[in-house]
Image (cartoon, rainbow, N blue to C red):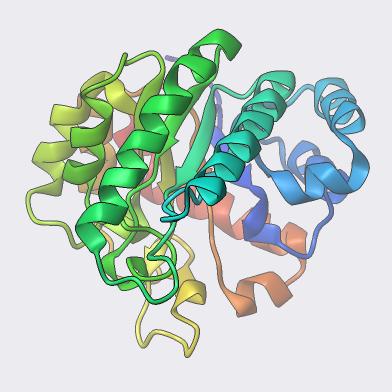
Length: 281
């Protein structure tokens, strides 16, 4: 991509500017010269899918991913059936928006359940059931491993290696993995595992791990460069694995959300250009 813009692969994940509506987020990307946006299903539902598709298309943006599917670890068969149907709707939305990836957050343990192994097995079964449906729609499922602090309530798949073990059983064009620096920075040998992932990498997402963690650990993500993540080595590993897709900045942080959206986008753009983009070549 010699001569390409230094932000040619940068995408704003909507949650980074959580106070912005979909319309505001699209306009903010255009003002900042960003080429892509990672959309969340809830803001799309607020305006309607047809409107969202038209807005994104008319703005000339790519949709780098749709967040989110998953939450299919329920022990009750009826709950799993409902989750499958909801994920089919999410796939339909991703296809309509032209997104290459539907990000899957597997879900945590059902209430009162302590069988983590069984919950992971149900997650794998749910992904396998969705895979051919994703293939028909031309969308890839992106299994997102989450930091182990979220295993109980949000994501029973805790490592990139676990996510790859699930994905490896299914066609690569249907199922991949999400490399999120916030969730994976701690994982032993993660850079080797990223290289092993190769063509399975469906999305690369950025946020820093900052300390001390807030009372709500979900909001413990910081701007790139504000915490403990080695973005240079992460990005080199992702590049070496052959990933050429968009790079999303996805930050959950109350202070970042309270800041003016244009200021947030300016900061993430500057950090990306300085700390990430040089390592994508």
